[in-house]
Length: 307
Image 1 (cartoon, rainbow, N blue to C red):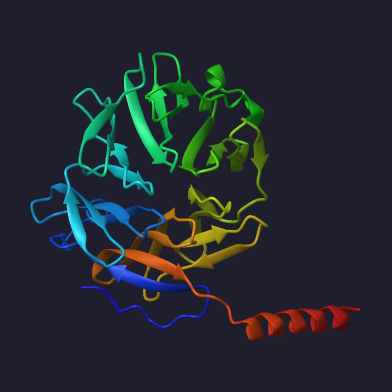
Image 2: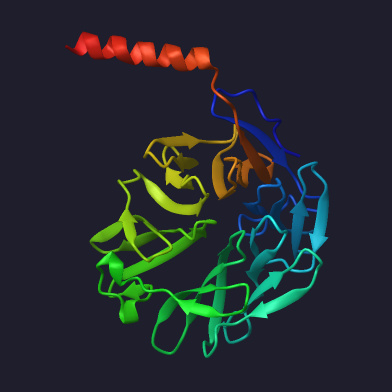
């Protein structure tokens, strides 16, 4: 059971949902999670059932659910290709997977690495991930041909081991990949921090500070970036390509965590209320032109008064 979505002001209309069979009597780490959405409106995620087993799901734009055979999902593209990670092995190593729309699955392991983790997939079929070797933690792109390219993060100007993802008291977290080949991520550590976008040519742009940032979680082709902030509680945010930032929460929620965004600006994630954890779909609500004109006029009046 969840609280019904209430009428809210722009910019979003919220649709909460629960996957069939989800265990609502769950701990915070054993609930349900919506983590990705493609341009067809298909949502991918996972939930824990009554037997505390993790189950992967697809939810189509009509609200129909399909259970899939892999649970550790992290993303989906417009071709219906789902990516994610298999459970950790007994020695704490990991392997990624690619599940095609037909159901055919392929394991993904970076050559020579002892552990591989998948982060995202775009419509070109490129897969973003990380791999761990004996000496470093590095990022890669896997092409649809199966070829791997190791990514260089020296452009961040940090003292990173082998130009990878960590250095002394510094960690680079990659959180999303769009169809333009742009990667969004965060730098965390002692004395450093910030959000960046890496373009397909390897050039980095550091973004203006996102206040109270917990972490980014995705990027779409318009350059909209989503993530989580600690602003009067855990809430979601959207940063437009022009730098405007909107903080939002599901009505009635005590915690809102967005995890995926498509090119229409639809956002998926999960939220907590008094009944437990649930998935949500946030659909942008167009702002009426009259309201835009009113806002512009009001801004003009305020500017003149300041003079």
